[in-house]
Amino acid sequence: MRILGSKVSYGLLGLTAVAVLVSLVMIFIVVPTEATMGIIQRIFYYHVPVAWVAFLAFFVVLIASILYLWKRKRKWDVIASASAELGVIFTSLVLITGSIWAKPIWGVWWTWDARLTTSLVLWLIYVAYLMVRASIGEEEKAARFAAVVGIIGFVDVPIVALAIQLWGTQHPGAVIFEGGLAPVMLATLLISLLAVTSLYALLLVQRVSLRNDELRLDDIKRRIEMIREEGNG
Image (cartoon, rainbow, N blue to C red; front, side, top):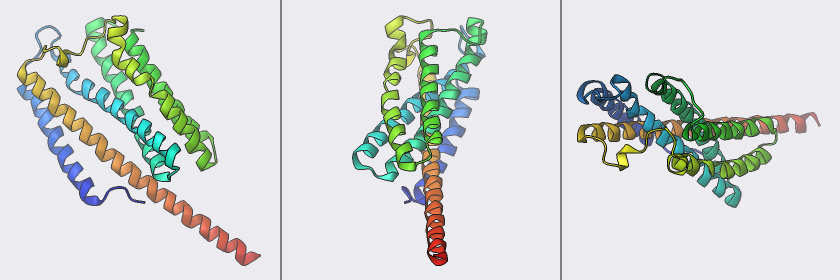
């Protein structure tokens, strides 16, 4: 079953393209270089948005998993699995961009800081989610187990978000909520947030549509096989 039509996809594609283009102009031409960290600070304008989208993706997994266990409708499992895949990709980008920033600023690619460690745990939880789905052959059973992992795994999201407040880590705080950004920097960050969020929505729509096509093809194959068996019998 197709969740969203092509008009929505084209709308998201146009919005994403424009937002990405504007954000790149803002990041590399308009916004000034930060005085303390220098040019590496510009990675902040994509590191923060991909972290936000990773949280959003896992929130969608949570809601879709709850709805699947409640309604037992396959469309919710399809949305949950698609969003989990994207969440793992965006969390990978969080870890990679964070390491690129950490090397010149902290002098190391990685440290067992509470924010970094809980983020890595989050990535591992949803990799496990995908492995559970792949390792169980029966579709309904895999969807049921994955939904449970998706719901329990979301517990780590608020822990990641609050890690700095809970443990006083060396990871920088949320300057956007502390008034620490100049207006042009805040505008650049908000445009990047729009760009990455619309990219996530576009990819989710396309992945759900592709998965639905795969499921329809599997159904057709099963019916053909049943007809063959009835014919041979």
